Figure 1 (cartoon, rainbow, N blue to C red):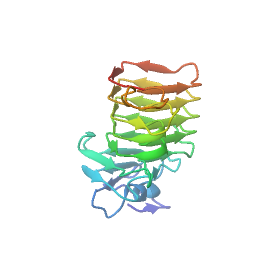
Figure 2 (spheres, one colour):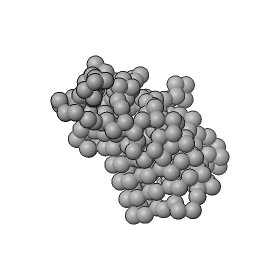
Figure 3 (cartoon, rainbow, N blue to C red):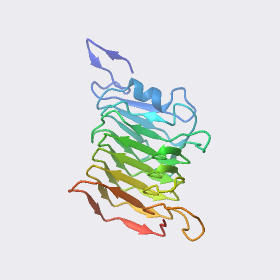
Figure 4 (cartoon, helix red, strand yellow):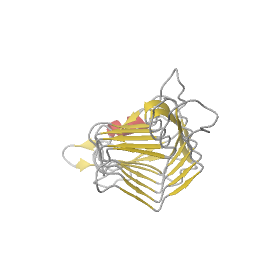
Length: 229
């Protein structure tokens, strides 16, 4: 949907104002292509399926106040497979350009990320919003699934499962929050971390690691099961 400087923004469905940019697993555009086109207030809508490869991983929000969501709002049906390994680091999304709470990721599964900080999502100096997402089998040095530093993240209705750390003395096998106000609501944390009796390391926070988090942080209505560190 082109942007006309005289008429304003023309939506994908012929509506003036915010547009919906559809993305399909088979292309022709990637998630990053759609974000590059988007303006504040727009929606990048992922159709059901599994997204892989460049442009569909290591995605940057570029500081934009946009929503990236699944069309079905069912994370089981809309997945990003990062295909990250120790010799080829990849995660799902990076919020590192001062994004605020109107930068929203919703209704998506991110799995198989392997990254230095945030195997699925890295947020630095960002107050992003995560809603109804699943983070599965991601690995990082800190924040196995989600790493948030110097910002005020809001995470609601998300599932963290089978995430872990590769680094000794790491923090937060599923989630790490540092130096900000964390709002964590109605999330579930299952089977994150490793069997501490079978490994030799010093990993902290089988589910959540918190360091220098500011007053006002809240963890409400969450369920934790079989997390180990």
